[in-house]
Length: 76
Image 1 (cartoon, rainbow, N blue to C red):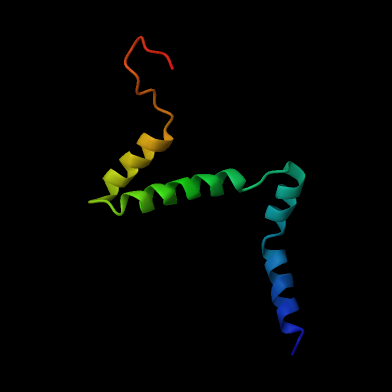
Image 2 (tube, rainbow, N blue to C red; image 1 turned 90 degrees about the vertical axis):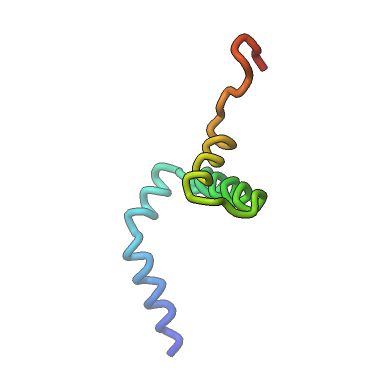
């Protein structure tokens, strides 16, 4: 029956209705989160794996943490 996909779509909209309304009213986007995920994915691919999870987390913090790595007194 051709009606089944429409029923599934209606169920999905009903299930996520408040999230949809909030996104429209608050004008928010998941763009920043997707951008961050993409940058993390690129770090993972670039380094071809990690010995353990903690090293992966440390590398993410190193690259994305906006750390000031210049010696004290050097502004850049």
